[in-house]
Structure formats: structure tokens, C-alpha cells
Length: 145
Length: 102
Image 1 (spheres, chains in turn blue, purple):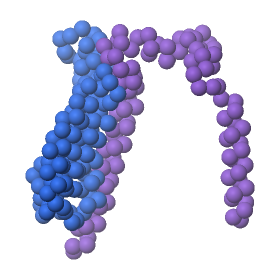
Image 2 (cartoon, chains in turn blue, yellow):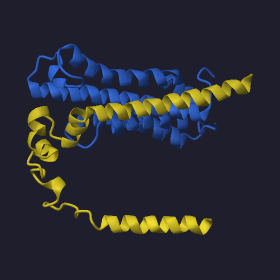
Image 3 (cartoon, chains in turn green, orange):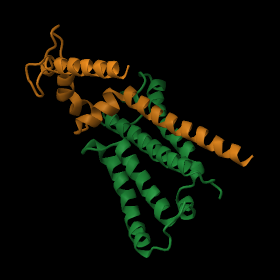
Image 4 (tube, chains in turn red, blue):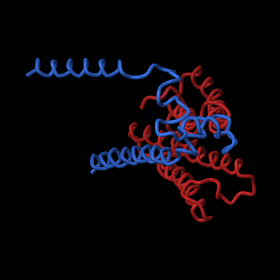
């Protein structure tokens, strides 16, 4: 794919903006308890930041930021975080995904709040990794090239 | 054959429009889903969420509480769908490229 590495305007603007998009994505994931947002939306923002760097600075720099071999393992890790949160509740005597039984020293409503946070982090990680992996697969470049 | 297809489509269009006239208005307080009690006398799920979402989960955003706590099985399924889509892209597109090289 043809990259715009020689264009100073897009290079400068995207390298300034991309970290802030990354930060805003994390904010959306963590702040989903209090405002519209959550794992799916925040994960999409994180993926947008990484894909912006890939589009503008070329695949070589993009591979340094997020290697395309990490895509599917990180996506599986996100689903495993979600599933493990549910399974931890089973091991400590509750039903699946019943955050009331998570082994956290908090009162009951805070346990549920933290359970929602873990689940949203898992969703965000999976969505980010899978979107980047789909982009890399569609682009059709070898990961080590 | 083409005209029969269009005819069937039109019939379904009018059927759907006719069916939509029987739906309750948006925000209608007297419709069954918006009532506090269901017709059998038990409490509706939506009024339970509105009353107890903050008490149960300490989360002011009720949508997040419903998605990630009360209906977390559904969100687990959605995430699995996304993972499956990514894995299928990986399998189909990577495989074809390897065949081209050989």
C-alpha cells in the first residue's frame, strides 16, 4: 500500500493527534460507568488511533507500535478476561458472571461496579485487537515484511 | 416472475405498515412494556432496573449496568461474535496468501 510518509502535514498532525485518541479511548472505557461509552466504543477509538498511524506513517512504523501478530492473541485474551471474571464468580461459590461473589474486599455494590469495569476492559481489549487484526488481514501484508 | 416478486414485496410492505399501526406510541405510559406491573401482576423488568440499578451496581449509567451486569451473558456473546469474525478473517485471508506464494 502506498504510504504518505513524504507528506509533512499528515505526518505531523497524526503523530500529534494519535496519542490523544488513544488516551480518549481509554477514558471512554474506564468512564463507561458515568457517561455514554464502554468497552465497544472505547476499543473502537483505540483501534482508530493505531490504524491512523498505520495509514499515515506506513506499515513499518505501525508494526513497531502494534505488531500484527499480536492481533488474535490479544483478542482472545480480552474474551478470556471476560470469561475469567465470570468463572471466578463460579469458583468462589456463585453463579456464572454474578459479580457479587468476586473475591474483592469491598461492599456488595462496589463489587458489582468493579466487575463491570473488568468486563469492559476485556471487551475493549478484544475489540481493539480484532479490529486491527481485520485491518491487517484485509491489507494483505506479511507481518514480518 | 419479476412482477410476482414485486407483488409479494408490496404485499409485505402493506402488511408491515398495517401491523405498525397496532403498536403503542413511543413513550406511551399506558402500554404494557411501560407499566410498572405486567398483566399477570408481577413487577416489570424495566421498572426493577430503574429502581435498583444504582443500589445494586453503584453505577449511575443504567445502560452500562444493564449491559454488563444484568445482561452480561448477552455481552459475552457479542464479544465472542467479534472474536469469531476476526478469527475467520485471519483464517480465510492468511490461507489464501500462502497458497499464492506456493
